[in-house]
Image (cartoon, rainbow, N blue to C red; front, top):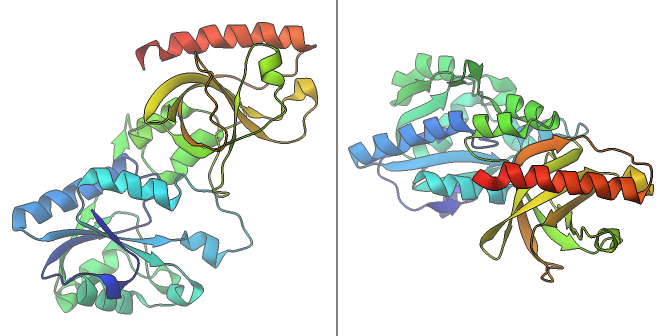
Length: 309
């Protein structure tokens, strides 16, 4: 997979099968789209192309309304790389770009730059000024554009529609199991290990405090989770708390992972956390002894959950 950030850097393309979208989460529905693009391109000896945008259009058009995302651009590109897509074109989404008409967008980018012969598009994708473009628009103008348009219909998992919105809702509710079913993989966050107050080590549960630099990253609901942690290309089992540590009166949101059977110095290292299961809500305990008793129970529960992972 090759990644490009403007049309001038693209190599010469004779013919391509293209899809368009933001693809936040790269969930099962997105994966179906990309699989069809790749397979069709390979059958016809064309290039498979994904045209996407950064940042998210909503964060540009409604800049005063924070919009949280399932993936950073780095995470998304890593997920794209698993699909065997040939080229990914990441266009910078600006207010000026948002005013481009659907016709000009298709003509200049999809046809002229990418030499698209077949455009594969999700049932709900909209593009162009005021979202005038979509499958209905493309189908009505496909002869004019000289391309074939293929619509990917709604993808269901256990009769539940897969969408980035539905996945965000499940993560905000702490339902990381449902999120994993819809995504096709376990939800992750990445960040740098920073110094904390080191209380955990004094009570037998040392933790890695994680600072997530991507401020738009959607965090699961506060609470305790069974997780896996990627350190130096090795997945380790752990339990993690997201919250304010009410027992010790903290007012700062922290993300702390107690990594099982691990005591190496990993300060300033970047780690990735994979959410496997939610164990409980964050609680305020009547002193450190009660907290330690609960942490022992959490450890046993997390260990049991992670046996099969």
